[in-house]
Length: 219
Image 1 (spheres, one colour):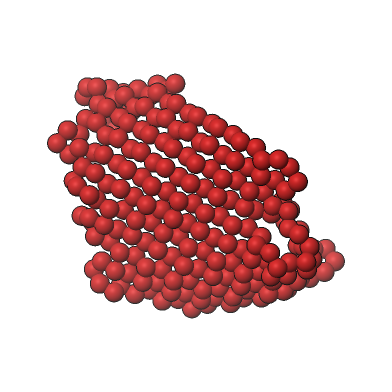
Image 2: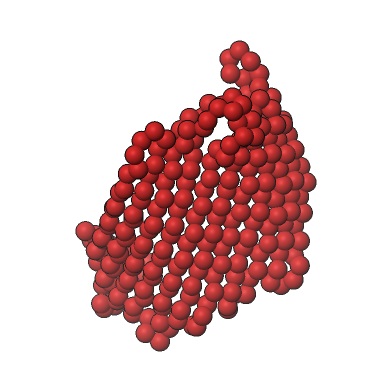
């Protein structure tokens, strides 16, 4: 394996790595050998008073009884619009291609957007809002398919919304309210699509017993 980490400036950092190895999987009768090669790149930018982002790219190639290629990227960003308002973004994506079966075996996608309001001059109250989109496709079985055979899959699509707010009622008491809603569609090979909706509402009172010690009642 090889790796390199470089600080390009006070705000920029860079990483790179490459690996090669052999995986031996003994199933009781046969030793299955897989040659794995992988590499990754990563960049990070940090401006503590304003903006920060981190991005990573990675690829992995397996050759053996079953040939697979996997690609992944993970990205986050935070930006302070004003001293009171901050927004954040997240984008993660991965894809696994089964070259033996000539099919996409798995796929994952996560997109997130966050918003935070924390008034500096009125710090008794803050508000957090978040939206997340999830797409997940994964095989129904972990057994390796033969060339040309179909790969059964489960597919889920989710939209998740959440809102949280907190208010300091006094020096000792704080009221916290949180609501979340998840809408999900699931499709399994050979079955009809199903729709699910789940909601969560949390009410909590925090009590500052002494210094960093807190007690809470939640419903």
